[in-house]
Image (cartoon, rainbow, N blue to C red; front, top):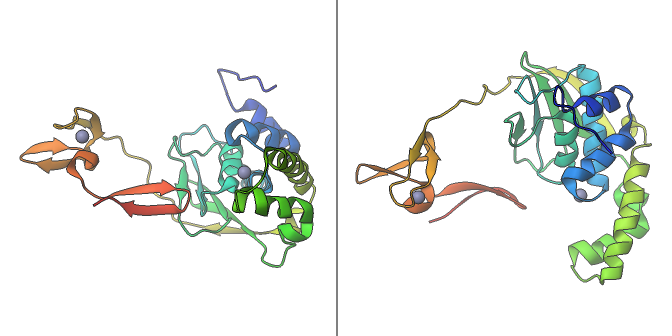
Length: 233
Ligand SMILES: [Zn+2]
Ligand SMILES: [Zn+2]
C-alpha cells in the first residue's frame, strides 16, 4: 500500500513515474477512480508519458497545468499521475469531448498527447469485454454476475493496455501554448437569502444585497456526465 509522506505526499507517485512503473500508477489511480478500466489506463499512460517528456513535477501549486478535453475515465488517470486536479486549479477542462491531454509548464512549454485515430478499437482489442460493456453499462441490462464479470475483464484489459507501445495508440507533439493565468483568490460575501458564503464574483445584487446564483434563480454552469452546460431558468 502507498505510504503518504508529509514532506512530499506525491513521492511514491513521482518514483513510479521515474521508473515508468505504469502498473503501480494504474493501481493508485483506483483510489480515486474506484475501478480499473481502459479509459483510466489510457489516462495513466498518456500522463506518465507527458510528465516524462516534459521532465516536470507538481506540488499542486499550478507550476504545471494539465488541460483535458474530456471528463471521462481518462481524466482521472491524468489527475493522479500529473497531480493537476479539479481542486488545485491546475486541471483545465475544455469541453471538446476528445481523449486528449496537454501538459504545460508555466513558461508555455507543453506536450500534447492525442489518441491515434488509426489505432485498434476497444472492440478489436477486447471483444468479450466490449460485448458485456454494451449490456451492463450502455443498456444497463446486466445481472449482478455480469457486472462482476465485467469488472474482472476490465481490470485485466486495463493492465494489458499498459503494455501497448505508446506510439501505437498516441501521437505525441511538443508545442508552445498560452497557459491560463494563476487562479485568483477572491473575498467571500454572504448570501442575503440563504446565508451561505459565496466567492464574490459569483454573487448577484438584488435590492442592494448580495445573493447567490441559486437564490437569485440565475443560470449557472454545471459540469455533469454529458459535459459542461448552462442550466437554470
Ligand atoms: Zn472508468
Ligand atoms: Zn443563497
